[in-house]
Amino acid sequence: MSPSPQSISDSPLTEATFLILLSLAQQPRHGYAILKDVASLSDGRVTLSTGTLYGVIHRLLQQGWIARLEEGIQEDQTAAETGRLRKSYTLTRLGRLALQAEAARIQSLAEAARLRTAGVEP
Image 1: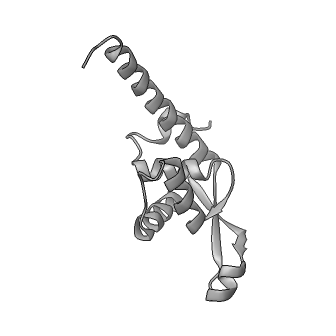
Image 2: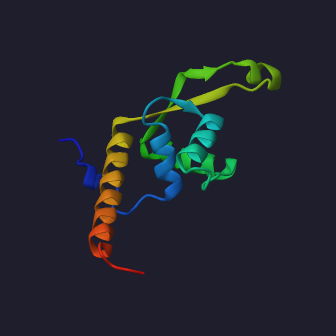
């Protein structure tokens, strides 16, 4: 039996984790592309340090929520200049379930806030 979205995570995801998973929802990305996408998704409000990014990536790899793409180790112009290869990451089925569960949790909270504050004047 496959896990339900509610059983994926017992507690809310950190904002960094949520945004990294969201960044990988449409396509695989390498670390620098994730950093740029997270900044874009948050309208510049969240800028992850590389330490935070790779700490979260390490944990997500261990949890099986993302996977490193073997074919994602690519050489591009930047890699050719620096001599470093970029590793790409993709969302797994389990990671997609966790992302969907967290999005539903956030949506539920936002709806409760909307209902509670409707018609309330500051």
